[in-house]
Image (cartoon, rainbow, N blue to C red; front, side, top):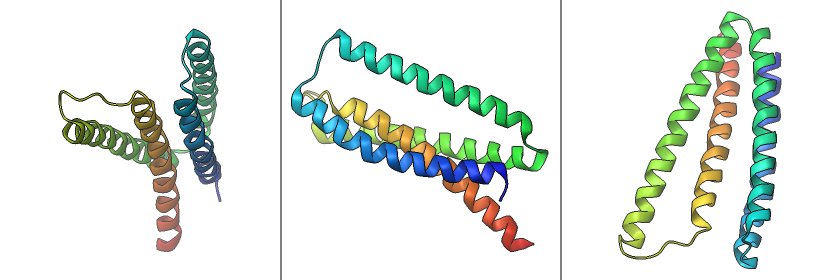
Length: 140
């Protein structure tokens, strides 16, 4: 098992853990009707820190990959982007057609769709990486 495959397993576990935490968290925030600048700034700062850590970790690990692993990672990344965009596109139009053009949509639906799209993209990326490595091992 190489570094990229280990990272895919860790990311897959992280996505599942984040989904378990984010689901009740969004429900609680909607139920408690949280609002205000403090909550917004807290989520912006935590999102920026998480994104920066993830970006820096990926930069370091990308340089350590060989050419074959880079091709597999690029394929998984492209597929995860396509799935995420397709999910967000379909979800937004489903909400539009189900709710109607003149009806209000609950505010908690937008961050729920956004977080679901991110989690789905991460899940697809990890799954594609694991499937590609299993396919290579099977072909050998």
